[in-house]
View 1 (cartoon, each protein chain N blue to C red):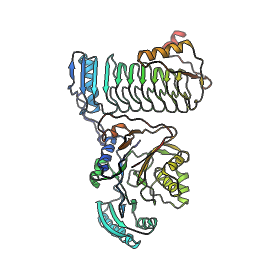
View 2 (cartoon, rainbow over the protein chains, first blue to last red):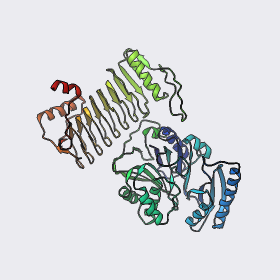
View 3 (cartoon, chains in turn red, brown):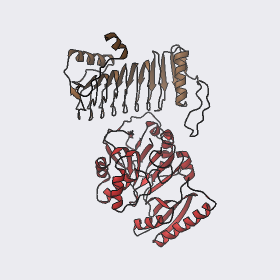
View 4 (cartoon, helix red, strand yellow):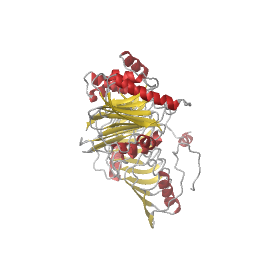
Length: 311
Length: 258
């Protein structure tokens, strides 16, 4: 069933506790999906890039060599980045199986990401000037504590509490999805896509890579590809209503906008709260009430709705 | 309702279901401050007030959009929620008059047997799902599939309604004053849907019906009871009876006929 949530502050100054907000929202929807939790957090565009990298699955195969292997992998990721022309500013070790790299780069981002992912077991979770994707097993409070997200200050965020139905419980199949290789685009999705393989094959033929078996991954790449061809986020989302089959409510974010789309059956829930300074949306109102702590006027957008807000 | 230990590997079940007994009781009236209570404790307190303390009128403050509040109440009483409810609010009730001063999520008043539920703001999808009797009044808009599988009672909506309104409806009435989405009355067996605004598209086997004096009387009566002002100009939609060939009698009624 999954729980999705989004929040965007509209004054654009980028000094809001979006990490803490998202943890509260997702924790309130833990009953919708306790398997894994993911965040896509945005801060105002920085000079350099941030890359979140997964080195191994949190529940993957463990042996006596694991620590040593992960240590070698970290070195290799850094080495590959330098070889591809990146100037590394800093490396942070969030958990034993994940790392965050801040760096400067002038060249082709796809080439860089491809080269990093070529290292065995490595996955680039997110890459951009303002986007940071963090996802791991467990509920929101566990993940936020592991990755220190409560202090994240920024402009907007989306999140996902996953109940795995059609693919495994691991980090690769957790949301949000980054629209590899398009920087700063991420998607969370509640639902099932029935023409997943059709679109996956189509997008693979166009040269895109997929790291998971999860149907939601194609939404991110589909939208980013549309936007790369010149469509606005809203136009791309409108087209997706025809192109994607199945039941869905998804939220897509870019560095300055947050959009939501609902399928034509209105089969998956979404509650929306809009005010002059904040827009908050979630699968259940109980999540919104964790960040707007008073009686509020909310409503459910109708089937086929596409709405976009900018910060 | 004492605490029951259950095996709960994911930590999702609220273990402590004991009655808090913190309401301010004044004769047959009581006020419950629910902000710090869990869903289970709110419902346990409500039952204790209504069934054991003989309270007839309960006001619940700060329901805070929590799910499944006020469910399964089977006695005549008045319940007022000072705030919004989450999903499945006031489901499976038989008798209460409920006032919600806020909004409700999906599946409000699901399977209500009798009673009244009045919602001052919007409602989510599946409002009045499988309604058997009583009146559900929503003063704002409702989501999709309002009154799905409705088997009796009346649903009044002052705003718009989403797609598949009255889907597989078997009996009862709906009065939707605003616009309705596509698939109105899709696969309905029986019952009547009145619509004041635009109909995006009719569902399978839903046709426009002939207006009678009984329709005028019903609409006027419902609007009068709930103080909704003058009813708008309405159109009437019923089942075309081309899709299904079942009889529409309850088992008890069938005995009388035979």
